[in-house]
Length: 143
Image 1 (cartoon, one colour):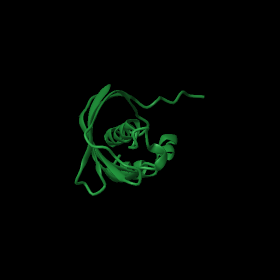
Image 2 (cartoon, one colour):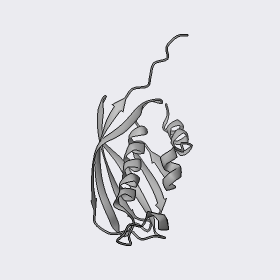
Image 3 (cartoon, one colour):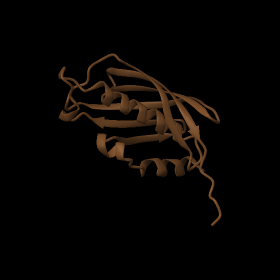
């Protein structure tokens, strides 16, 4: 599969979680993606800032999609360990971008990282790392 085929596959994918949060895939490169999120008012926690779980979901999506760029079509990757350090609060009305990168892609596991920044790129919001289980494509069984 060529990188262009991977780009087309990734840019056309809309999962239920993508719809729920409103993630938008901006860039797809080999081992790297850029995912954008507009922070809606319903993402705000009791402290008046964007809930950490929303920021974590954005980072997870960026990391998982970056890994998908290196995998054969039909391969599934699922995060099983996430570490997210939030260094700056995000506000409703703000747009965030997460750059996911693959650090290691093995046959069964992978490790990725993501930086979540303001859309302008001048402020780091969070730094994340994640471990992923890699499941090969399911084999077709003859009918």
